Length: 109
Image (cartoon, rainbow, N blue to C red; front, side, top):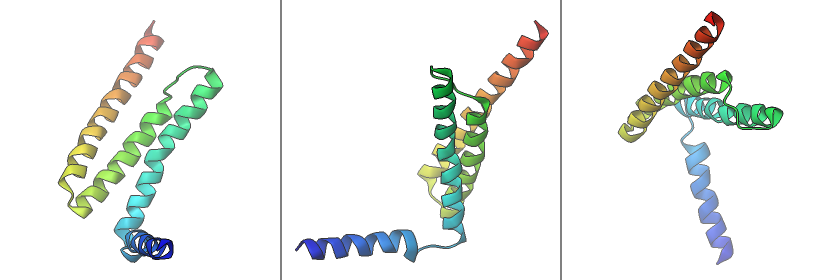
């Protein structure tokens, strides 16, 4: 029984991750990697500072990964994913605008 379950799960995972692979899926993998890197960058910056820090690189990875994931969602024609990523990219761009504005105000002072 456990062998049957393992074979069924293994077959399912093979179909999901390997069987349907094409250039669009490869784009999705790269996009997801970039998007995940934002957390790695934020974690490293926070560990170095000894407090929670959100570096500008976090927003760059958020925007790059978000735009690529939006492209993947459009390719897949997934309306839920499209709405989520489009809204996310808007928020990331707005946050980057705040960061850049804050740097400009700090330089002026």
